Length: 153
Image (tube, rainbow, N blue to C red; front, side, top):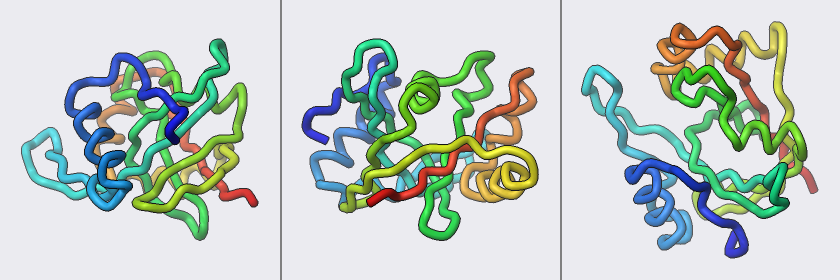
């Protein structure tokens, strides 16, 4: 992870979260205390995703909320309901091999976008760990991608 750059243009709260996560080796920041849009507190599991830039070839680090499905990790390319996919998702489409840090563990993974009934089931799981995804989906005409990160050996 030391060769990965923090993704550009992250808001300050995300930068603070990444720095806390990295400086603690993952002992602080894995469980993130957030507030829902209505102000209610929620604790959400967070991982650090390292992708290879599709244009630059450089490694970039992104903090993301996640859920689990067996040994795999569920992430959602919501970008808050923006009309375009987030850069990290475009990077994974170009090169699905990535690395994640989950707490203190670093895990090589292969990303795959899920579709059909598998997507529907994982979308419901995602709504449990971050309910605002439902509102994000209403803001955009694109179907928000649900990505499964499968560990590789």
